[in-house]
Image 1 (tube, rainbow, N blue to C red):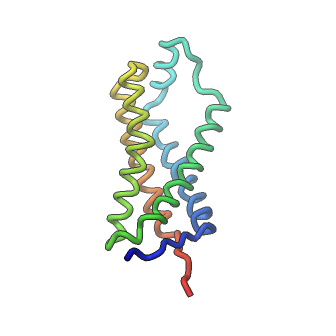
Image 2 (cartoon, one colour):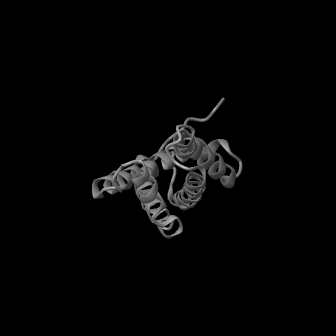
Length: 145
């Protein structure tokens, strides 16, 4: 019989904030790598560069992703014998359904060039791994009495 899952909501929230900030911080490291390539692609399609409002949206998205990845970790980590296995499964699963599929759609529709998307998607995997590792160290299970 499986043991009951007890999620520490307060720990999910606080660890998720740290994970979101980590995603934002690591994500910002991509900017010098791709330079103005995104702006060039957007301009070639007569689309203006990302606005400050867009940046706020992506920052909000990163914070939500941080919460979601910690919640996912809290749900599954007790099913794994090793913590690193839980981190790998959570990160790869989350990355596939959030970063990879949406990025693949951008390439399939011909909206974004494959090299630019490949760099961004690989970087996304890095930022999620870092965020999951850090938040897994911060997340604390509910103390069962």
